[in-house]
Image (tube, rainbow, N blue to C red; front, side, top):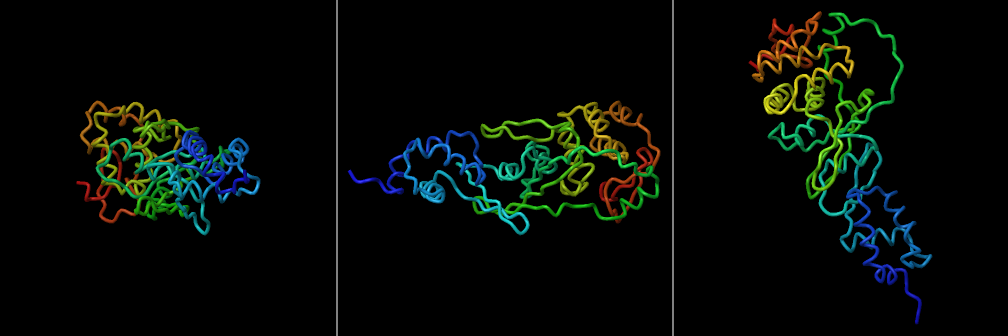
Length: 299
């Protein structure tokens, strides 16, 4: 009997190959993941030594087992191979180990928005850093910081899935030891994501990553019967921000119609400075209760 060619050998082992690839657990594979599968199983599949990895990946693509998704990261590409139907969030999460979904994307998965955002936000915490000994906060430094545009990441992934174009904002937040990070079940897969309470804090801190202050207020409205304000305050304390974001949170809670007893709980925290709801406010109004400047259109 003549020896099988590498293509014939792949076809002969097809049922076993497809079973291994589909049963390995992940629905989004890196090039390295696919190569490991090939290297670990090629002898068991009795593939000829001349069989190349490209033969293997091309075979899986032709059979419809995997679909290649080119992902642009700046000037380089980081391809992903998907099995079956996946969410664009799964692709973004696969780009960095230990990252988790956050901001607008977390709002969507927690059903705190009616929008279906095409931009996916993930966060990878920086390593813990020693105290930098920064100067104490002053009213002048606060005024100056919020008179400028909010800092935005330029680390953005771009890819097309099912004919739609998506962007992934790959954030590098300060070290929080994954405080307020959990997992949700999404189509038989667990996705790492910020809790509702942590999400509300994150979008208060960086409103542009949630569509702006109006969308943040809307999220607080959606969350009214779902969250614990005590948990928000405990999480906020644990995150150790320099700026008094509790003043902005108190404002959102008030405007979203939370109980007065809840508002008084937030009101016990110090308000030593005037603060800002967001960056570069054009038409400014002021809340005496929260010592906070906010956009007039929120009235």
